[in-house]
Image 1 (tube, rainbow, N blue to C red):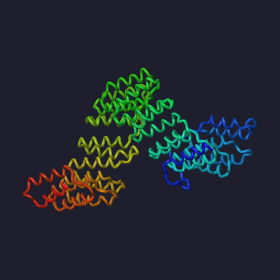
Image 2: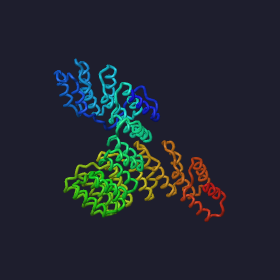
Image 3: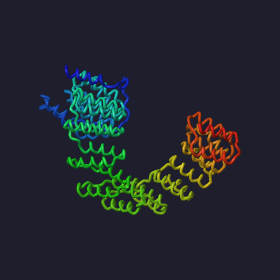
Amino acid sequence: MALLGVSSRLLSSLPRLGTICSCFQLLSPCSSTIISVVHFRALSNSNPNSKHIPDSHLKLQQLLTQNKSGFKNLDNALSLFRKMLKMQPLPCDFHFCQLLTTLVKMKQYQVAFSLFREMCTLSIPVNIFTFNIAINCCCHSNRVNYAFSLLATTFKRGFVPDVVTYNTLIRGLLSQHKSAEARLFFANLIKFREIQPDVITFNTMIDGLCKTGHTDMALWLFRFMEKCNCEPNTITYTSIIDSLCKRGLVDDALNLHSRMMEKCILPDVWTYNRIIQVLCNLNRWEEVSMLLNWMMEDLKISPDVHTFTILVDAYSKSGKLDDAKHIIQIMNERGENPDIVTYTSLMQGYCSQGQMDEAMAMLNTIRSKKIMPTSYTYNILVNAYCREQKLDIAMDLYRNMASDGLSPTVVTHNILLHGLCQLGKSMEALTFFYKIQGLGHKPDIVTYETLLGGLCKNHYVDKALSLFRTIECNGLIPESNTYNIIIRGCLWSKKYDGACKLVDKMVDCGFSSDAATTSVLRHLLLSKAQDPTLVALYQKCLH
């Protein structure tokens, strides 16, 4: 059979995707491919007996339609499947596909695949749509290898995979970061004329290329798409515009936006959000204003919460706090409720300007609107009060996190430790460190570096050395900065032998002294007579 010959060439040309597992264990993924009901209806309508549908089948169809978005519980779906197996005559393949599709919508991928496998074992008729559901389950559960084995099975059974099959497989490869394999697979599909790629095929490939940083390749594919008489749509343009913006090529993104408009393809709010974001980052406020006016007045596209939040964040970071407040006012007038991200952006603006009363008022506003603050919200406030040297208020906020149902993060603790050390309270910081450790909070390497720096700066080098020795006991590995901090502490306190041993260990780990450590050594060499230990240390650091 000619088709099978071509398909075998296609399969053999694929890169090795690894050994296909004999047993299938599905994990827990996200979205699903919805199989076209129109195709199933066409299938069932082609049945010569479709005019004489048994009452049991009519009731089944009604039940499946009622629960098409998902059954209340999984047992109901499984019970229905068992009843379907006992029906005489058996329900048509459309009904089985409907049930599997509903399970996929419920994210019961393992169950859907198990039922598909049971259908095959019991010789219940399956078709390419049933296989598409099974392939989709594999791809969305990081089992793309098994998905390709199912593709081979479709050929063996004499089915002709359709564009949905191949789109699903391409998406599966890209979701597992196999962009090279996806490109080769796509190229072979074109080469062997297995399918006429549709806009979804191209969009899947272009989006995957953009997300992996291959914008130039995505642009080439975009041009190839047009040569294939496949019209790009809003999703196509937005994927490339987003990628160009991420690379800082905002002018190219704006040119593509203009081309999009010339072709009468309307951008959506997401397209504009991406361009507005990068224009704000570059402080190109006039263009932001023009784009917003064009979007709202000419195209009648309403900004969403994300659009407004981008503006609030940009104005806040630029110190334009009145403008940021005005945006929130506009949001409320338009019925677009600011979320925690919006309010936190403005709060951060107040904190960066030292307007702590306004920042605290913003926290009260958040609570009054029944919006839950996040750990990040608290971290901003705690950090700002530490910077203002108001440790008492920072500690009160830290203790109040629990009242909002939040647990402090390692970042929260690092901020407080840094604040204590900056005020010369390094021993209090050490006590606090041991206290939070006792409560089960795990430090990171920044925690240690903060404490080591504070202890060394306040002349508690012996304490710092003891703490340094515990780093690896907590499952962490000292980094270049960690070594340099403790080495500088030893140099300041004239523990040259200790510094020498630490330099040896640092070099063995593949690290080297930084500019600050070298500067301390130079200063000591200039202020001392040529101390042999210091000279040796300096030479080691240079190497």
